[in-house]
Figure 1 (cartoon, one colour):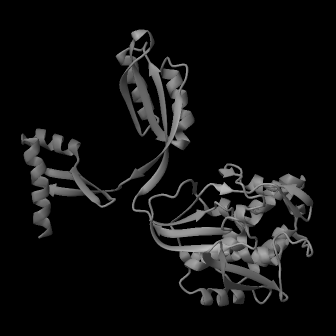
Figure 2 (figure 1 turned 45 degrees about the vertical axis):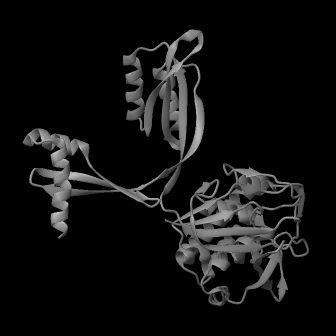
Figure 3 (figure 1 turned 90 degrees about the vertical axis):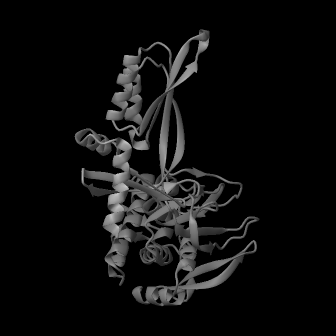
Length: 395
């Protein structure tokens, strides 16, 4: 699966993400020409080589009337309404999908600003994030992702920085209130760098495009890009993006466990059946020794995150436990496919799993058992017949 991983260990700003993604593009100059043509001369996007702490990267600039603007520069305030932003996006010569993404990004910002200021969205007027350079960053990121076409976008936990930031509304704590609202439910932290590292624009881009946050998965990297920021710190002020292939799926799973010493085997079996019925990935018992030398069992239930509460209610309802432990794991899956092989005894499903350099095939036991009984044939002979028939069909 073609996967884009965004390293936000130094936060995320619109211009830095633009620059990092631009480094992945096979024809940077062509992209810049097309992007500037789409903007109709209202803004000019340019890129230049840059370096932070010895790491080579790209820095992008947006020129408005020949001057470079910054997302939090105070000398040039913009008061742009949501309607004006949407009208501008509608007017650019970019694919409809790109414009849809850009509007969704600004909808996230507008919703956050509305809550921060206690005003209806239609009465919100953007300052820094409504400037032409911020708009250009958003449109550029949306277009670059559209052209790079990753199947999945992941991100590290987001370093938002610490301290205070000066903006049009005054001096605000980091993360700025709008940034914090946009990043609700996203794992964030403050590192040792005293500065605003994640801007509202960067936060909204992450929130819109990223599907999962966490450590980088097992990734066969094909390209990497570094987008540099304006400020210099004793650590490299860059957003890094990695493009590559994930051989197999990675998903976050929840393990719920509890110890039991006062339930009958029938009651335990019923609890297991109920958990499976409600969608548990796996349920099993482990023999353990408990206090007062009592033999007991540990019930373990594995499920996806969206099933956690359902599984917890089922465990408390159908067992005698007073508490449940929770563990969060990443699970890596082999790719699975299924085909049907026709034999002289009947059709048999064959399951194939592959990835991480391995490939396995297994005939479905239920099909083998049913046909073995119906035809009075040994199970092993029938299993061999499956592969003989398939080899004959492939000749």
